[in-house]
Length: 411
Image (cartoon, rainbow, N blue to C red):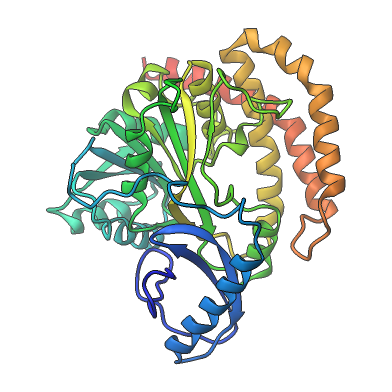
C-alpha cells in the first residue's frame, strides 16, 4: 500500500490485491519509498476497510518511530519521471531449474515494469526437459530471451547470462521471486548516482530489499524469523575507502545484500571474471557466489549501495523439511565464501585472522542483546548452520576440484 495513493492495495509483484481472511501483512510506502511493515486482521471482501485499517496502523507506527529514523525529504534516491531519460540499458538475468510455474509468475511480474530499456535473459540451468524453453518461446516476440547452461550451478548459470547480456547494467533475481514494478528503475537510479557525494568510489554493485511474498506456513515464518533476506528500510553504502565500524568488514558480506536482488555494472562484473563457478547453489559449496562477488567488488575499489525501493518479493519454501537443509546451506555458503575470498585474495588472510577475535565478540554481544521471538532460529537449526559453516571450506575445495575436472573434460 502507498499512503499517497488512498484506497489502493497491491499484491507482491504489482497485481491488484483482494481482501482476505486471517492476518494481513503489508508493506507501507510513501510515494513509492518503503517505510516499514504493518499487520492487521483481514476482512474478506472489504478492500476499502482493509486499506483504512492498514493506513491507521501505519500512521500509529510512524508516529511512534523516532523522527531521526524515519526517511525524510531527499533521504532516498531521486525520483525521476518515467521516460524522461532512458539511461543505461538493463539486462535482467533469471536463472531457473525445473520450475516453469514459478518462472512464469516471475516473468509476468518483471514484464509489469514500465522501464523503457530492459531485457530479460532466462538461463535454463541443467534442465530435465524443455518446459522452460517452451515457456519463454511463448512470450515471443518480446523482451524475453532464452539461453541454456547444461552444467548445474547457480554461478555458472549467472555467468552464462552475463555472457549473453547486452545491457550496461546486469540485474540478477531468482525464479522464485516477484519483482516490484519499480524494481528495475530503482536499480538504475542507484547507478545513476555514480559516486559518493565527496567524489569517492563509483558504484559497482547495487542490492535491494527482499520481502516475503507470503507467510502461510511454519517453515516460511521460521525463515523470516531468522532474518529472512531483508536488510532494512534505510539506504546504505559501503566502500573499502570508508570502512564501517563492523570489525569483520568486508568479510560480513551477507550484510550487503542477497543474490536474489543484486545488480552490477556489466563492465565491472566482467572485469572480475564473473562469478566463481565453484560457488553457488547446485555445487558442493552450496552457496557463497553472491557474497564473493560483493567482496571482490569492494576489493577492486568500487562501492556497494543498498536501496530499499529496489524491491523484490521472495516466495520462501513452504515445506518444513526444507528448513534444516536451508540452515545447513546458509552456513556452508558462508564458509565457502570465506575460503573462496582467501583463494581469490590471499593477501586478505592476515586481515581476516586479525579481525576474527573482535568479530566473534561483536557477534556474541549482538546475539545476547537480541530478544527472543516466536520466529527465532531454534537451537537445532543454529547448530546445523554452524555445521554448515565448518563444512563450507571443504565443500568449496571439492567444488574447485569438480570445476577443474569439468574444464579438462570440455577442452
